Length: 460
Ligand code: ARG
Image (cartoon, rainbow, N blue to C red; front, side, top):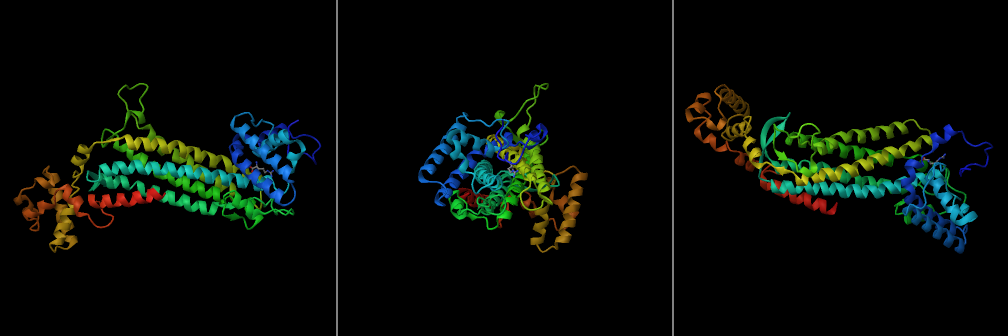
């Protein structure tokens, strides 16, 4: 007969269809280590309340330790008959302790237990996710350091706009990650609230000490409202937003890498270890890592939508709908822990085609703005300068020339403003170096930026 935590007032057993619908142990079993942590804290608080003797507490902790060992060793496994992780672990406890095992459930409910377990699980895994994010930052920063003064075509609308330092562009992918980490750290502050002691919804008539339990479990404090505590899944939704935002950032980096690796760009070459082949075309080398990073952002965004939709309109307090909180959270954690190391590897091993970048940096008349700004420095209103350079660009296009190829006469013919010295600004290195204000793409500023980012990553 399957063990249930709620058999007393029922005459017949549950229908198979109900059991199959209700069971969550196939996915919530990964909460077992956290459930055991919370159980140990709960045993101690029952002891301090005079509800377990010293000797009973000793046996209880011993059994919980042994159960943890058995779970780790794979000796203790949940069965399909265990409704959820809490039921399975109670079975394990009863197998070890007999009737004494039945005392641990006093003063708590699966409602406060599951909310506590999920917070413990997420706070733990967010720390790992943050480390993986720092690794990706580090990979991007090493490439940025090597390419601080490599000129590259900077783009808007995917059209050549102005030359930039390739390192600057790589660091532009680091800043979003620093914000992600910052968000996750800030998330932890709000997640650090313990629901344990809230019971099913109303707290307990037993003399428990939720604040002490909270401290023992590494939370900052116990929840101030037992009803909110068992109903609240803000921490799950907020985590999923952070995860979806990381996904969006990885998808944008992924898309750029797909472009960079294409024949048309040839900005980078991916290492064999991080690229894939084709089953039919022998020559192919495909950017699947970058594409999966781009593609998997979809499921991260989906997980957030699942969570918010589940919560919308739920009355207080606990409702079984809340069991739907776990799979999106677990899937988001798994997805990030899969994608991040692969993207870090791809970035740290890619070879940057410096010659190709440098050669195409001025393409598409990308120095036109420099020319217009030179005229401004000579007192020409920007409106007129913009117009004159525009004419020059058209002239070049019609005559199949580059800005740098023009003779003194050709320059003068388009506008009297174009004296021979304008050629001084028509070089890419000068254009980068000139953008030397804070936040600009001058290689010296890029190096300052890198130093500042390294300091941030060190404390992250
Ligand atoms: N498995 C449930 C969940 O994930 C916890 C159990 C609470 N169940 C209940 N019937 N009160 O939310």
